Length: 603
Image 1 (cartoon, rainbow, N blue to C red):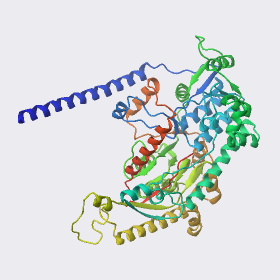
Image 2: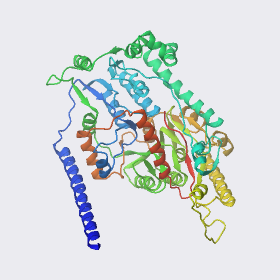
Image 3: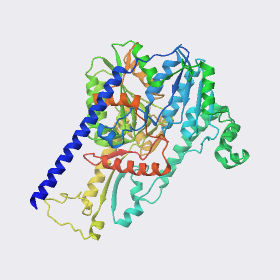
């Protein structure tokens, strides 16, 4: 018998070793192919009179992330689709004054869900491009609301004959788990300050609180007004025309016999209904045909950026842009988070780099660990003390812990559509004693003090421990208020009424004194350069957490690999949302279990 067991484990060991060799060889081949792509891929050139073609894929993000090699193998080699916002902005700004670029072409079919502030920043760049006298044409097979919001900034909007324009408005629907937790006997103890700090409510309520409903309604109304008014202005539509399309879509469709493309054209949302071949022929007529005559004269985003950056002279003085994207956690970062220690280390390295004259922190985070947030804020404060200006630039979300780190800057810039504020602290503690008892599992033991073992979820939470947690929450909330008050030059008594965990738009935060200026990333970079008294400078994006293998893989995949679909089915979206919520909770690791996080996401 023992010999059979031995043979089994020996065979298992050989199988594991063979699998390990396959994985290592596959990774080696991928890296080799990436190196060949670097060497053999021809240097990009920009044809005279070409159209710059933008086809954003997946979500707009501040920093693209890339799965590790094993993650790519598990997913079949298909990377998550993402497009860096700053790449698009850089290309559009360069093309505006580039005599080789005759036109901007935007195709939105692969654009996924993206924050309203990012789309608005991109629209403003398109508007600035149009001011140069060069036309902008956009087309979609169909338009989701975000895709159409972007396309509506163009001079001409084209739609496929069987396409449609979705423009339903904004909504916020939250899943509440109290009923399920009660049925299982799970108790969730919540400790918080601020009646608007709603992150914990899904675990303690069966529906939205009055405070959360009020704040959510105010936020959505403000953002919807921005979106609706800008679309109406771009398309030169009367408000009542757009309102009818939104409020009575069934009636609009009935008037066009159910033809969705015709309904969009008759409303004025689009200019032309065109097939794919008709679209290509139109562009050939506008800018000319390629050498083989099969396509129009064009240059794509990656090639254009490579050509522009290669021709740009390097400057001795630099402004560094660091990205804080995702949930803030203690320690090092992963692909979807901001590590308190790792980001602080990056800030420290830039502070000690003589070439870096100023720092911009681009924040796209709903917050997270209060401890890690303070670690980052302190490092920014030390950078300012060292004589290097620090400017915070808020993207779609910079709330709670995201606002805490922004308080370390000399100056805070936000988009009007940014979600920020949510100044508050909370803690969650699950108690599993009852469901374990139902299973016949009991817990007994000894302790040397009343709080020893008090935070064991298998046992009821003692009143002394609950009191200690709430006292800690109260203290950290006061500290949060004092930090904000010192940064903003406001009395604590003035900060508290606009804190209490409430989320504000950037426009409202500007009026309340929580931010200094309204504007985008380019505005923040310019502000940092002014503070450093720089006339000529280079903007750099440090990525010390990305190794050479990742960079090679990114280059290879941008050339050769397919990307995951930009639009998921409703079931995929639901399952992805549940998975993301679970992964988010597992990522929380604050050493004191105190969190500054808003239950908010960019619409």
